[in-house]
Image: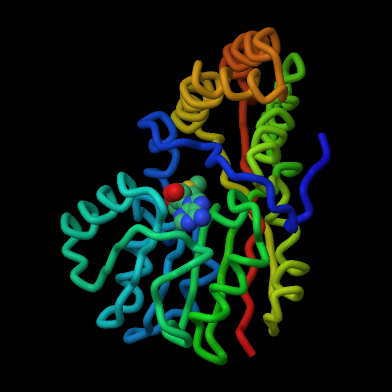
Length: 276
Ligand SMILES: C[S@@+](CC[C@H](N)C(=O)[O-])C[C@H]1O[C@@H](n2cnc3c(N)ncnc32)[C@H](O)[C@@H]1O
């Protein structure tokens, strides 16, 4: 299956969905775990956009870093914005404004933000230039862009029992047929350049699952989300995999979890850049 290059305009379907099973992965995230590359650049009083903020687990930490400045969180899915609103309320973050909307057509005036951030969003939106043009529009001159995105080819299960790592390819193929970009995390320098950003810095890191409780979490997550009937049905329907492959992934996941050296990691690439 060919991988996309950040330019296609396929019809998009959001691969991950909004089930409780997927939400459990997002709930583990925080600004410290997922936006460490951005935090040193944030100052009190900044106006910050978190586009594709999802349930807001990263947004709350970003809001704390810029208070009394305002964090604006935006997501196309109302259920996620509701969860983010509840998190803002529970955490006493009075400087968070949350709304639904599409990242390719945002309801903000030109030059509104000091900083624009996203985590795991460019990898899902088919038209990368359209998103980055819109983000560039709403940033001030000199404003900072920070994105962190999947590097599918750097994700692994160790040991890769019974071809378990082929599951990452199946996942990447599913993302790609839905209009996404499984390797976006390593394409950030190019897509930022093409969108006219300057002062580009990029790096990469792992979200790792090594401690026994994290291995147990990732085993459960992979079974309950990736091997769920919903995902299997989508993959089979789109011709990405057949049911026998998923039966194999389930068996391999159970074997992997029992390995004394079991570990897994998601590869992420991050990039920082400025609007000229
Ligand atoms: C993998 S989640 C990441 C959420 C959050 N940034 C995090 O890392 O926890 C991707 C989010 O992007 C949102 N999204 C995808 N395409 C979008 C679009 N075109 N406009 C607005 N939000 C979008 C989805 O609704 C989803 O909540």
